Image (cartoon, rainbow over all chains, first blue to last red; front, side):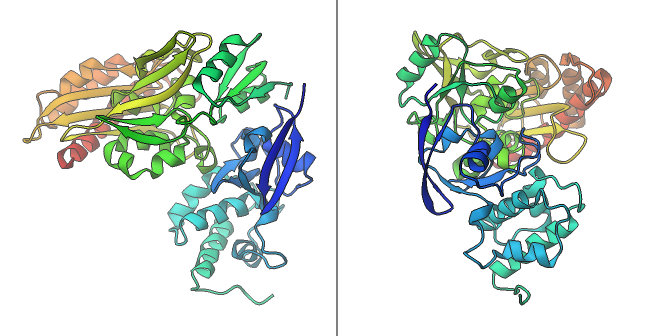
Length: 164
Length: 289
């Protein structure tokens, strides 16, 4: 079976790869492109650990085929920071200690960035509903929600990240 | 996952040819949020996946005369963000918005939700309540059928080999026509309907119901159009007596199963409650529409 040649933009860089029909976008990111920041949790779209942004929309990379990314713009966790400077969501996750084992964290950060891109000033309820597709079995979610709301305040210029 | 061929045709005709000409099992891919789960679990083992998203019009929303046309593969987020649809079909948007998480919303489509043929599919009751039709392409050309004709049982549709849904056509609401969809789940997000109920009503200037459709989900092998429940509303305002008759009619139509989400008795009871609540919302919206 011949492989498909796919042309995309991933984290701002033009990327071409070959993949088979049944390979998911998650498989492509991790196994073909060595972008292993995106995690596989459930593999069935329930946990959000594999969240990425495709053409501006949040999706589960485990429920998308790699070949479907043809012509698409993709952002994974590796593309969230600006070089060495962390995105406010990442900075606030550290400040609020919004992680324990860290396995869900890339998915939460990508999902939270997608939320704040669309709605820079979410209520707590809006943030909780938006992140309902991301599961964390360690933190109990409260620190995550605080971090996301605080990151929103930074992005709106109402708060600052703590000095590094 | 087992190996599978993939093709993304650029026209409806090429998609039909690929589906009809496939040697083994061919599956239609729109958002993929059900199909990929079934591929991984081995529940379906297609030889070919036909991705419809590259066909012009399969993603998008347009107005055509007296109808809105929604491309079959249009993702949930695009439907929920559309100001015209928010205004015209609040009930449909309530159903679409309940399909999975934000991540699922980024991909899932009404056609996928429909053709996956789950009795609990959240977007299907309100789409039926709004009297939508599906345009189906196949080896014999195109045909247009009411959406309620497509699901024939859990996991089964009336689509023939080589056929797929191209778009949905939904009549624009009349003056004082609106709808609502409610579902019951034991938590607030990310669960499958125990019962779903869509109500669509058209009122006259005095608030008297002149036309109605009541559709239940998750209480029978397919979605149910409950004519007795609609008749309970037609000719009446939303008073206690009317609500009581609606509740009774909705309960009488249910043929549910007992499973981990709810017993037969519980589902029947909840169907009546949701019918009353959805009707109250639909009447209120229709009065303002």
